[in-house]
Amino acid sequence: MSKRVRLSRLFLIAVGCALVAAPETVLAQQSGAVARAGSKLPSEPFAAVASMARAGDYLDKVALAWTKEKNCGSCHTNYPYLGARPALGETSPRYAEVRHFFEERVAHWDDKAPESKPKWPAEVVLTAEGLARSDRATTGTLHARTRQALDRMWTVQKPDGGFEWVKCDWYPLEYDDYYGALVAALAVGHAPGGYAQTPQAKAGVLRLRGYFAKNPPPVLHHQTVLLWASTKVDGLMTEKARQETIARLRALERPGGGWAVASLGDWDRRDGTPNDPNGPADAYATGLVAFVLREAGVPALDPALRRAVAWLLANQRSSGGWFTRSLNDDDHHYIAHAGAAYAVLALHACGCTTETSRLARKTTPAESVAATRSRP
Image (cartoon, rainbow, N blue to C red; front, side, top):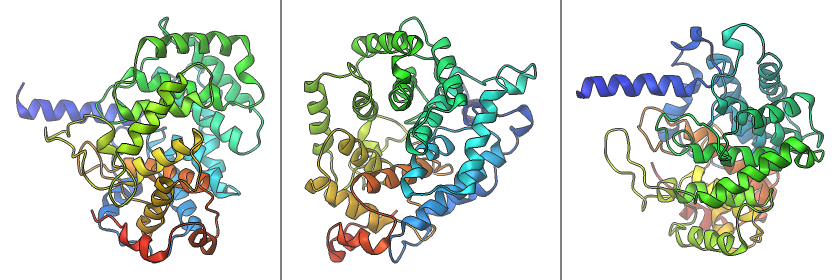
């Protein structure tokens, strides 16, 4: 295959995978506010003082912009937003608008119009997970549309317990079926109102347990998410496997605190060059790992988590977001959006509040915070 043909094929795959629920008229809309936001983050100045209020504003802006410009859901932007934004306290009208978009998607999945139907099984699973986490974090009550999405999720589960996922080699979220099973486990695990005890859920979880028993996590990133899911659904990991995962993650902490996403898997960039597992910490890995360790019972005052909090506070950008370099190429840093969501979840889980003044008192001294800053 020639280089030109290969690049053209990669572009078409990338476009298709980014538009989980988009109608055909959206395929040309590959530029706009969300694209500009991602491209500006590497050179954006650091915030003088960490602010959770600015973090909320950033998450609101990129999630709503993606939803409006692309008319779709994405693994890296508006789906993680649904679960993370409530950690900042009262949600915004922009949050309500994004959530309404997904509720409307569910309401019209069975319409005759082709563009109304789920693009892939992944859309069903991701929507069920996003709405379930939203319900858990806001009302604590299972919404009717969430229930509808969860019930439909089991209809697209494969006999082996897994789920067909988008495979466009956008690491670490859109390239293998294993991640789809993880998202499904998180969906049922977060669903409030005793949903996990319904007949559909019990049968589906039983198949999920069988899938995870037969298929070990292919990379540490997925093992980390499995650890998270195991705190919500019994029988996904043994206690020995949970402790081994925690130990592996501890061993990969960067010298200045935090974690690097490239160290959580063996992924090459689209130009064929390897990602550096020994590179600097980034917001996606630091937020994800710190949050999951807290979910797994590691105390907030654990030294590694205190260093992670210090790193996150020191590395927020002036817009309110955090930068994470794409594992794939340097034109699409959309993983930074998910990184900001996990940063917020980690800070909240470690006891940081929406008040900037209280953030500083709950973490390490200011001089230690400044020393952890990672330059792009």
